[in-house]
Image (cartoon, rainbow, N blue to C red; front, side, top):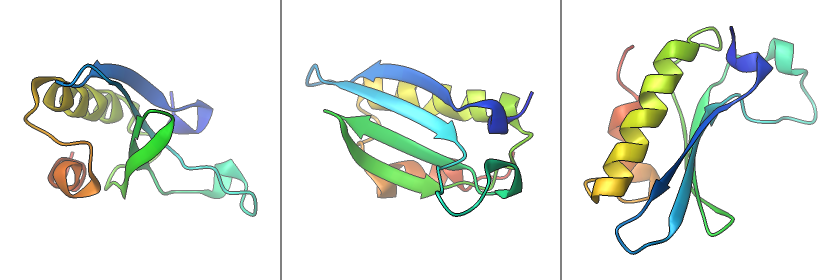
Length: 97
């Protein structure tokens, strides 16, 4: 399986009760075919707005590592250990898998 086939997503409930969608996948680019893209990004979407978006060190074929990253971010957001900001999730997404 590859992230080229689709993003990995999980919903987390923030401590204030709002829902956050955590997504790890290849960002859409209207000018480059998905099969040619190598960037994998982590996004946090709150209230329909992108609250955080950070490029990761993952490669498109690392779907199991992407699943683990989604779970870690969602758990941190749900517990309140992570804020839904790029600065808060960046240390997680920049680790080597």
